[in-house]
Length: 199
Image (cartoon, rainbow, N blue to C red):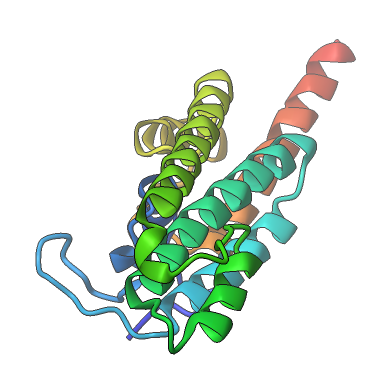
């Protein structure tokens, strides 16, 4: 069974899925060691949760980060999908698969399929470079900003506990609760700042 939304997915699991691109954390009760077979709709559910969380936490910084993550995910998905299509590509399915390949922004030549190996290898190298460049943009953004990376997640948890006086278990604290705790901490900080500004 998978987490289904921001109401039941813990921030720890969300962060692992987001930062490590590890969707096994979508499985409720997964112990981080055992092998699991993910249901077909795992990616779709993950993107629903991701988009919902993005909407609920939207700021300029998070919008930039989520845009980068979306671009990186598209490039990875594109690579995987075209790789599958090219492996199965033959003269009999050339029209259908060729169309699908072109929809993922890869080209297919008019020459026989058997003669296109180098053509596809070059496109895969370029696609891999695109992924690496986008990953470096994401990494740079993560270095420059306070993010949900696991180490920084623990730091944020400690900061939130200090501000709010709450005890937070990031492995059970669901996303909706996490958002509310951050909102409460922001309110406490604003009140504190106003009180000190007024003397």
